[in-house]
Length: 123
Image (tube, rainbow, N blue to C red; front, side, top):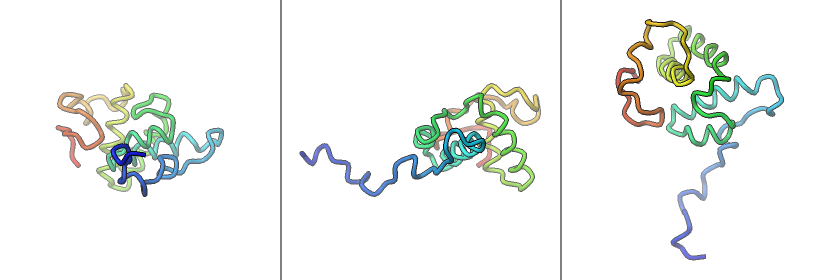
């Protein structure tokens, strides 16, 4: 094979399903684990890998209840970064909770969760 088609950097990188270990899809804990994986992926700039591993897109409405739980836990623990990511996920999912609290700075300026410039949120 020609060296032009070999990605030397990918040789040691784990597949998404190995970077985000999840229970079986029929496990009742899968949705919560998938939500956590999506937020973890967004935190490290690997939303694509987390989406591939979970089968869900960042902002999937089906995971709103799980992300609400994660958000409540992040607030309780004072984990501001996880709080920002969970709020971003919920806004993208069309979540209407807590109108006017913090989310009303809205979507303006927000471009993505993979490290692109995001205005109006703290890191």
